[in-house]
Length: 82
Image 1 (tube, rainbow, N blue to C red):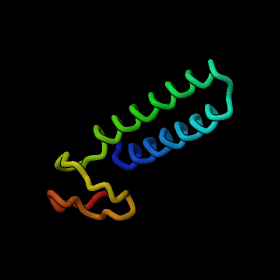
Image 2: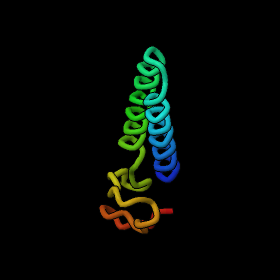
Image 3: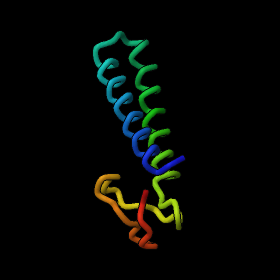
Image 4: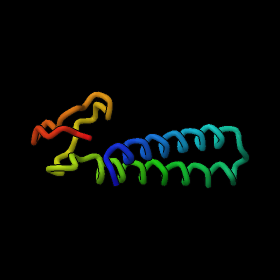
């Protein structure tokens, strides 16, 4: 998986978790618990994707958390990020 795709996928999973948490706030008691667990699972999966794939494609070093738009070169190896 590409580092840019991993960043986008992580943000989508976090957004879905936030939406589920908002829905859980107004839902009935049994459904609320299920939605909370699903939201927690989405957050954990998003964090895992971010940790595994937010790396330089050349040297595999972890990239800084600034975001895709703020990074032109890898701080470790100096290669240009595509």
